[in-house]
Image 1 (spheres, rainbow, N blue to C red):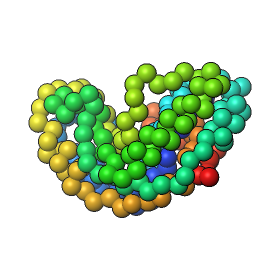
Image 2 (image 1 turned 90 degrees about the vertical axis):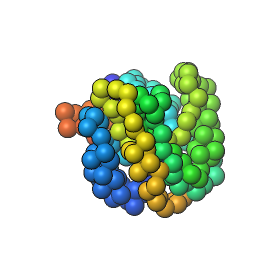
Image 3 (image 1 turned 30 degrees about the horizontal axis):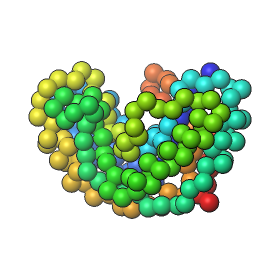
Image 4 (image 1 turned 120 degrees about the vertical axis):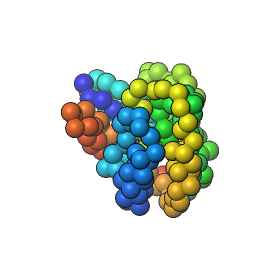
Length: 184
C-alpha cells in the first residue's frame, strides 16, 4: 500500500537555504538529529499514511473539490514539539500564511472526512519540520532555535497543494507527486 500525504511544495529558495542552515545548526548541538532533506522539504497539510490504492481515485476527487484562494506564505520563527526544553521535533514557523494554511488543512480534512478518512486528533499547527531529535534529552536548545528564527525567508505564493506518495528507503524518503490541486 502506498504511503500518502498532502502538502505544499516549497520553492527553490527555501530548499537551497536549508543545507547551509542545517550545517550551522549541526555545529550548535552534540545531539543526533535527523535533519530534513532539501529535495523533500515541504509543509504537510494532512498525513494519510498507508492507503489502499483503490481509495486513491476518491481521494483525488475529494481534493479536487477543495476550494481555496492563492495566498502568501513566509517562514519565520522557530520552536520544538513537544517543548523546547526536551524537543523531539525542531520546526520553523510561519510568519505569513499560517491562518490560510490552517484553513486549507481544515478544508482538506472536511473533504476527506466526507469519504470516510478519519480526521486528525490533534489540531493543525502549520510548521516546516527541520529535524527530528533521535534521543530527546534535556538541554539548552535556545541557540539552535534562535539561529533558525533569525534566518531571513522570502515570501512566496501558494498556488496549489499536492498529493504525494512517500517511499521509505534506507537513504531516506523519496516523494513522488501523484496530483496537484490548484487554487480557484
